[in-house]
Image 1 (cartoon, rainbow, N blue to C red):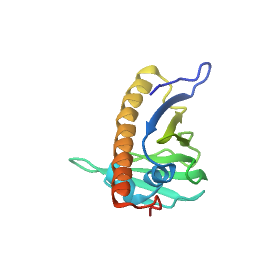
Image 2 (tube, rainbow, N blue to C red):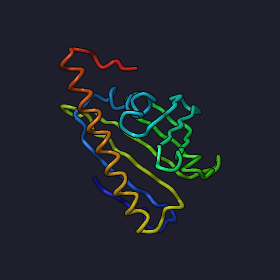
Image 3 (tube, helix red, strand yellow):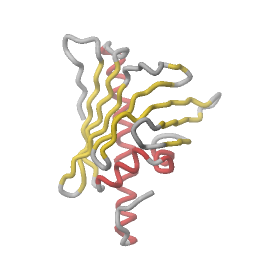
Image 4 (cartoon, one colour):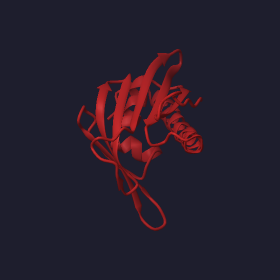
Length: 164
């Protein structure tokens, strides 16, 4: 996995690549389906995975719940997903947010390569980017582990990759 920062720009950009031994269909469902998201990413989720649809996720902490809200801005089933975050951890970043998260899923032999890009004009300093990059490493490893376990389970049961 790698991290990049755009040179000559105020935009902080993190890019990660990970090979997941699971079908693009399963990976896409894990990124968009509320039930799947609650198994690997958050404690609760609601998701309307269509352009203009909303994703709301929450995490329980010792004192309170943290909530994130995003709008799906671009969807190509099983290959591309783009979201614009508008609400993060109790802070409304607004409808004109420049925090964009995208996932590109490319089929590969034995699975798929996932490319994740996190771009935010407010996370431009190196220390913040490095902290976020380490966090993304953990998140993507959780996704990889979840998808690969689910894929093995489906194969063991002889199921096709039509999830919901």
